[in-house]
Length: 341
Image 1 (cartoon, rainbow, N blue to C red):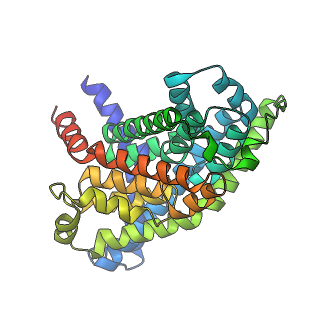
Image 2 (image 1 turned 90 degrees about the vertical axis):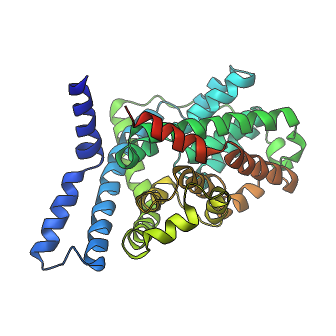
């Protein structure tokens, strides 16, 4: 058992967390005369280390995920989802969302396509919630920073949110609030071309280049904000505002996250710094969910596909679910219990 734990911690710290890279960056900066004990030096080390780490992990993850995704083009995904009904369909839709685009603005076109193809509205909304919120890449990156138990807790909360939100929308029968041009589009059956292994590898490489180019600004900004929080904002201030025992910390974190636009990879560095400064785990996860699932630009784009009433119901369901799950107490309790053994 101890050997297994040792292997896991090595994978988490040295392969996923790339702690060795932090030492390399520190040694390099020291050789250049940078004082790592100063706020500026420590902030620079954090920025370089986190930026390089995320880009390396992101490239590897996107390549692997995109190769898997090549087996699930929209046409095949539609056929798979069409075979299931009720809670099973919502669950499968949420799971399929974990191997699709990395931000909500990329997921909305697929949501429109699935809805126009005649899939149940609740099923397509489960996909829309899950796709930007939870993916295999975020699981690995969260593991590299917070450990496997917290990463799994985030994924479970995200999938529960996606399934519950989609199921509720299905029960409310809100199809009439989808814009007419989508409802009248009718099903479109396009046969997905058969891809060779070479085609899939080329597709994965192309996805790496496109996705990295698209998310690079958000990662750099996110790591920059994280570096400022990590080295320039007093720990006492963060604990006072976002500490685990504050009743308003989860709503405040969710509210702050909504106007922002970033994918999960740009949000994680900020979450990492808040965690290091003493912010509650539930507060951090609520912030991440607010940014990824309810960002203002994404809601503006979604408004093109659905009418105001359905948009308001969707926002309300997601926001209420994030707050009512009581992530703060449950996740902190989960963390304390699972790390005590």
